[in-house]
Image (cartoon, rainbow, N blue to C red):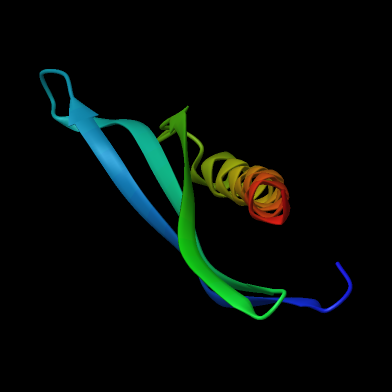
Length: 94
């Protein structure tokens, strides 16, 4: 990556609840991770955005466990975004 640079412009997480059942209770949580980036490779700029969506069941009975699970999901999303970013770099480099 000599003579190359990467700028992370924005990392954003969006949470959405899906409701269902006769009591219209939260059934599932979806977390979307978006990473906006810009590569400068050999004086060529390549900007883009990659995203990852992860879902998990809702846990209204134990909110602390749900919060902990959401934090773990964010860690997983960050790792998946890094993998995708690496793939983007390899595609641009070749």
